[in-house]
Image (tube, rainbow, N blue to C red; front, side, top):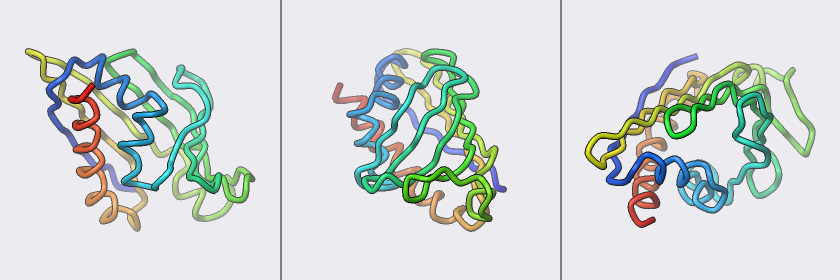
Length: 146
């Protein structure tokens, strides 16, 4: 598992960026880079289960490991969903089990710095190194127009 780091400065208050990142409509915009039509089901509350899905219903299921509103959110991946069935046992699902996605928000003078730290199986490293900067640029666009 590789830990990847990304960050971006967004000219908007951290509350605005937080909402743009986590509200369904805007979430669908910035995550379109990873999977067109992606969405989530569930809650961002600490300890809650959440599903990250594509239009066909396949995706991942996770748990919100931490949520400090407007400051930090941590997602712990638990497995995959294929054909509506949760999977924690296949080699592909096991590659993601316990992987974390951490988002840190800090604001200074109206600029919010978003830091992203993600655990990634090595076979996805190159793909995510290309996709994450594009996704964060989309998040910036969405946040700054709000």
